[in-house]
Length: 418
Image 1 (cartoon, rainbow, N blue to C red):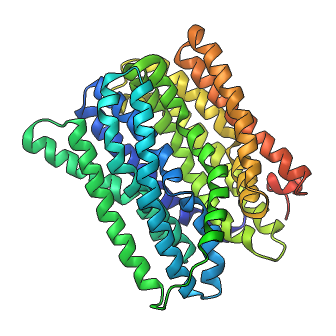
Image 2: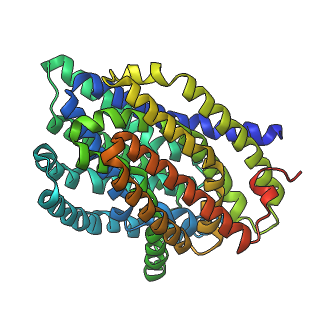
Image 3: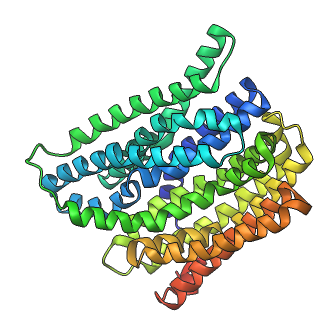
């Protein structure tokens, strides 16, 4: 393996690890402080919040790398200032209107009273969260990938966990309402910090705008990326709808633990972006990274499988055996994570981003149908089988597309080009 690639990949992995480590700290803290029903409701609201972040930003949290990286490369700071104004306005105005419509719809269709009562707090969390995600992507495009990754999630979750602990030990109790307020305060602190960082990078020039083109590009990325986020959290929402908060309390810890593999996936994604956007031939560099990613991903799956029961026990898992097999099924699907990362990034940055949407719609339809059929006989295991199979189907479909239509050699996908 190329030592420079391994070093760069591990350097980014350490920062993406902080993001997921903070998620584990926050969820472990709340799993111990809340009742089973309260924790299940919190997990469902958190999943819904994360689904809404990308559309609430009008797609800018996904498109900013593609839009702003060329502007930064050519030092067009006037356009960068205009772009900052546009994505802030999009999240503040469109985000609030969009989330309000979702809240009204959710309250009408959800059969769970607790979720109905607390979903209104998404109006606080989602718009500010969308700004936080957009500014994180903007920092990455402005050649600040490490601080961009840390402010994407890590700081706000650690601050939220600290505030929740302080509130609990001060008053002896912790409600979902107080948790939502503390999450908002933590996000607001991070957003102010990000804004200060960005202000110091962009030169003070008169802003210029290409609003129509930026919004068009962003909406295309929204159509491509929103489905990906939805599918990533859809399993938790369906489990909540079909099995209630008790089912989520068993299912969600397995989701968080399997999600540790996104440490590698997110690091590889950040490493890939500048390589794929370069104008020269990049097959060798991509292949070297894929060789590293396949090996590290497989090794991480083996480690998580061996540590599955101890990790689930940290959450106070009451149905340990069922949670164990749910986690094993999820890890099985993650064997194809490297292929999905490369194919999805290549389509998004070099091809037509809508292709990702078409693949996602097809794979998601199959996944939901499988989950609906299997849930009655297999329960939570049936949902896990469906989503693991859907992930594999989506990864293989994208890989076929990039290999046949974008002429990417299979040797590059598997890291065999030297």
